[in-house]
Amino acid sequence: MASYIARRKFLATLGGAVAGWPLAARAQQPAMAVVGFVSSANAQSTPHMTAAFRVGLKENGFTEGENVAIEYRWADGHLERLPSLVADLVRRRVAVIFSTGGDVPTLVAKGATTTIPIVFATGADPLRSGLVVSLNRPGGNATGATVVAGLLGAKRIALLRELAPNTHALGLLVNPNNPNAEPETADVEAAAQSMHAQVQVLPASNGEEIEAAFATLARSKLDGLVVNPDPIFFPRRDQIVALAARQVVPTIYYSREYAEAGGLMSYGASFTWLYRQCGTYVARVLKGAKPADLPVVQPTRFELVINAKTAKTLGLTVPPTLLAIADEVIE
Image (cartoon, rainbow, N blue to C red; front, side, top):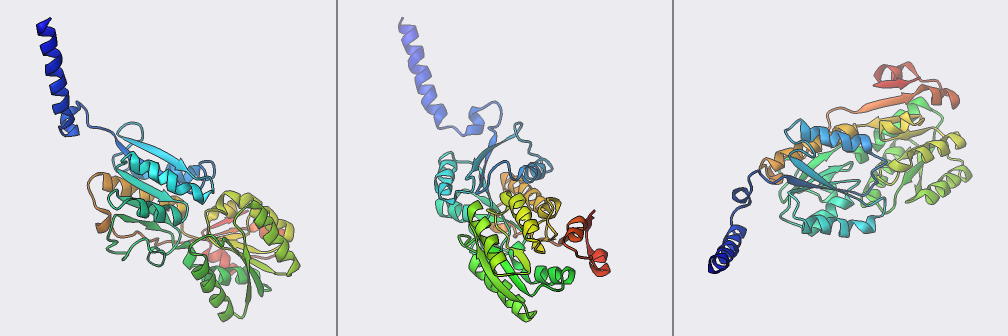
């Protein structure tokens, strides 16, 4: 009996000592790294992008379920849920947080932790958004990649008017709750003015407001539409494309997925590339790289996709100049 009690005391003492040992010394196998994945969107709207993120991880030595775990947190378009979702990942002490679906998830993550590394995917200018202090030397605990979708308004207007030259009164579909809405709207308005076109802002932050925005477009007799980049719009791309078709309004979008869904045309960098690049950066952080030392990655290629079938339906002829530069023409 005395021997049994002594053994229990020894094991208890050993347990206390083991608790103070480094994790690697306590386990026969290294603990699996955990990545926190937080998005303002929903899982159903971006499966190909999430898959691209996992490809980026795998290409750099990390396979989900084998040597890395991913904790997914989706806000389903409800930005007010993000603080609690991020707080949960911080409590779990994940190795790195990947934030996507606009800049709000990243801003929330930066406010919640200064120690856990953050890799972000954004469509905006990370400098203007306050995500980093420098593109080459981000500083702090956050870095990532951008498709600079919000900086291409002028180019989109020019492309739209080349395909639909009679567009002079443009609508700009924009989410007023997006922290980048004001500067990006100002950019589009300045660009339109330089091209002797007018812009009317059509605010919308949910499905009902998108319907109302198109009703305003019809009442105002606008003859063209630019859809501003926003994670609220992407899951509703079928709705937006259908409304544009119903109103018979030439529309340009910021990603190819809209053109693939029947939209007239799109111009922008690949979001699949964006997520894959972020998977690569998360892998580098897991291997010991510091976000402050990883430059924000920017695209070097932008895709012009034209839906020729939709153009024909709208009574538009795609000019040879656009056909020559288009990356894809959907027949």
